[in-house]
Image 1 (tube, rainbow, N blue to C red):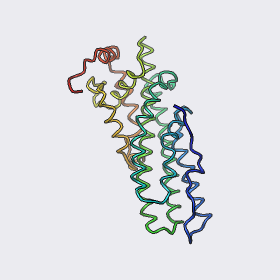
Image 2 (image 1 turned 90 degrees about the vertical axis):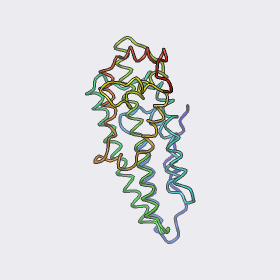
Image 3 (image 1 turned 180 degrees about the horizontal axis):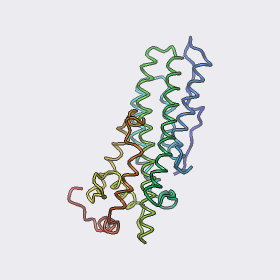
Image 4 (image 1 turned 30 degrees about the vertical axis):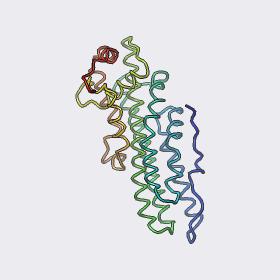
Length: 267
């Protein structure tokens, strides 16, 4: 899948509303575009992953500040459609180029870097939205900005989810390699999903079901702005918890269960 990064200038819609300050509004829109690009290239993800994020979500900047009905509905549709496409690419990436994480402490350090990067980008996006709303003379501009603020939170949640998935998948691959076990991209994908969605101390075999991925994606795309901020966030902790579950699981058995398709009926 070839990434087609979005030029930040493309995310800045024209024209400037009549009666507003062209330079002020243009600067606010440009700041929004730059901050969105930063959000889609978080620290701790390989360059290829950042390019895939921008390819999947980069058009949101253009949609967010462009006039017209149905804008927020279109944006939310794009946010919901992006994760499966990203996981298609990520499943192979963690096998070929896993992150350098060999223990839970390493997972926690990488997760912390990713979290700080995403929080900084979200903060910059919020400031840019405030600037765009105050510079615009469009009726309801501030209300629209608040609505877009929620969409920004959804985008941040998806980005954070992808970071958690990459870190967890990388750690899983490292642990499997250490045990001399080999798994294909599909198996890594289901094992990683299960590690992230399990509730106990070890990976729950029931979470190996294919339906688990849909539930995981719904969690990402259903999260909003509060989930992207430090005071209300569970994001960034998921990969650390998942790594702990991987350590306490019989990985050889889990791979065998996948290959024998011994999951409970209906799962």
